Amino acid sequence: MDPRPGATLIRVGWFPAGRGVVGSAMTAGAVMLIALAVFAWGVASRRLERLDLTAPMVFVAVGVLLAVLFDVDQHAEGIMALTEATLVWVLFSDASRVGPRELRGDAGVYGRLLGLALPLTVIAGTLLAWWLLGLPNPWPALLVGAALAPTDAALGSVVIAHPKVPARIRRILNVESGVNDGIVTPVVMVALAGAASGAPLLQLVGGAVIGAAIGAVGGRLLRTAGESFAGPAVLALALLAYAGSIAVHANGFVAAFAAGLAFGHVAGRGGPREVFYVEQTAGLASLLVWAAFGALAVPLLPSRWTWPMLLYALLSLTAVRMLPVALSLIGARFKASTVLFVGWFGPRGLASIVFALLAVEELGPSADTAVAVIVLTVLISVVAHGLSAGPLAARYGQAARAEQEPGPVAAARLHTHRLGPP
Image (cartoon, rainbow, N blue to C red; front, side):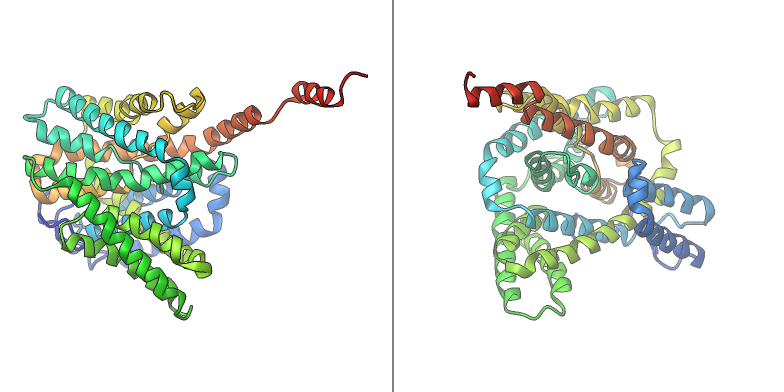
């Protein structure tokens, strides 16, 4: 298996190999539709988001429309590279916005979510898949459980950027989603191999060390360079951290996140501007990924989904994540509303798609059930989390602010207490 960017998918069925959705099979009309959709989203995104329509929702629909209107070749030679590069840029840019002080301040919470809730989610998802889907052995079940455990910050960007949600909660969701896909990658690899192999912990540590070193050195060098080409240079730096880590068999996604952390710490005044360029590029790339997902994967679902798959997808997005999150946060002094909010906003997105692509590449038709479940879960997550992000974020933010600020009666009592008796 070669899980690096550009690995060619050679299987038939889900995302089979060939010229690619952006290749020669693409008609001028299809290219025009995608370009028009990207431009229209840039013009009307603020208004559409007020209607609780998110970019993934819109561009999955664009992809489905693409498959209906045009004879889209069911091939995906370049989709793997595009999807992995997008995930790398998202991880890098998200991490660069997180300061060391914030990481230290909530280290206990991150330890609970990543060290307890995440493993429990993988275990629960694996056992449920083995029992509910009737899989022949535990390895495909482990693949499903691990592939659907990581969350997607980009898919939950409405929540993470919502001004009414407390900054601490937004930061916790952002860091969790930035790290958890890298943590479960070795588990996915073990599931694909069908036996425990390699040294997952060493891969994680190696990726963190390599990524931090590349991010720190790159950030220092860019402080002394000109600004004319700094943005593209940071794009390349993120990919360098990923590819360099993969080259020595370490974890590339952890490396990308660690590189972003280090870069954000040392980049200086120009860092935010350069990271903004990365965010914009990643935003465009993610729109193309979601359109490809809608064009290639969604049309195959009607002939492959089953009622047990649907039930699993619904449980994966609710109980399989929310119960482990609730258990892990016992004693963390969060209110029940906060625990439910953090538990629900664990959308599945780019990382799960990457793992599905890896399963297609390594297992071929034998991965059909696992890939169908992953695709169905991601599709439901796009709709459910997209529609609920804005309303729930606003409601939760108002409730959190009301709990922090004294009401009129409490304020009057406080004022009277300070003045003393007449």
